[in-house]
Amino acid sequence: MLDPERPAEGDGLTVEAGDGHRFRLLARQPESPIAALLWVPALGVAARHYLPFAEALNRHGIAVFVHEWRGHGSSDRRAGRDSNWGYRELLDHDLPASLDLMHARTPGLAHIVGGHSLGGQLAACLLGLDNRAASRLWLVASGAPYWPAFPRPRRWLLPLAYRFLPWLADRQGALPGRAIGFGGKEARGVMRDWSRTALSGRYAGACMSRDLETALSSITVDIDAVLFGDDWLAPRSSLDFLLGKMRATGLRCSTLDAATLGVKADHFAWMQRPDAVARALASGLDQRSA
Image (tube, rainbow, N blue to C red; front, side):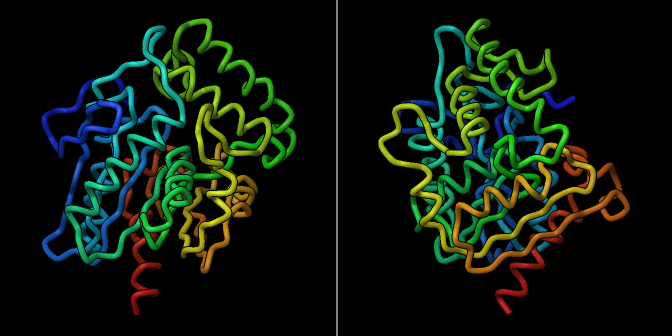
């Protein structure tokens, strides 16, 4: 089981966000990189779980910097009744700090931002808020959680979950994600912001001064997406809804099955055997470079 609560070992680069939050940015770089990627994990998954993926991308010449979620792994914060945050802190403080450090470490390289699941959604928001952040967007098992964007009959049950989870987080002081099998110990504000998108279809963060829907509509880059054949959490319809908010200059989407992956084709199993995902993403970069 993925353990987002255990602190990481002393690996990576120390980052201090604008509000004082400190964490480690895990970096894996090949000898002669051709591009650099800032990778945002799925909700509640600590950065260290993506190191095999980073090393697989290194074999394709891509330097990888894995962001750490506030509240997990090497982060010096933990969600609770007296410690809360939402998309505003993630998008205004944490992700820009990781992005700035990646840029400083990889001058002159092509830059990519991307992520897994909710991480991909926030990577897209980051790119929309700062169009200079990267020239490509990579999405793995990622799509908007908007309930009508899911196939029947599951879509009819989703609004119940989308209302229950933030309610539970409010009652407990933080979402007890490991106990219920969804995320980790998540901040109440993150769950409210996520639920708002899931119910309304619009991206927004409480108290944010910038409009995320406008930001997403400003994205005009090449996008590579990877989906999995047995992943009900990120069907093609949810990805299409997310992509519809952007103006991609080029789009490549691969759906990988269990035979290709060597493991189950679901939301998380690919992290055990990430070579096929790394190959699918890197092939698009190679084609465009050519």
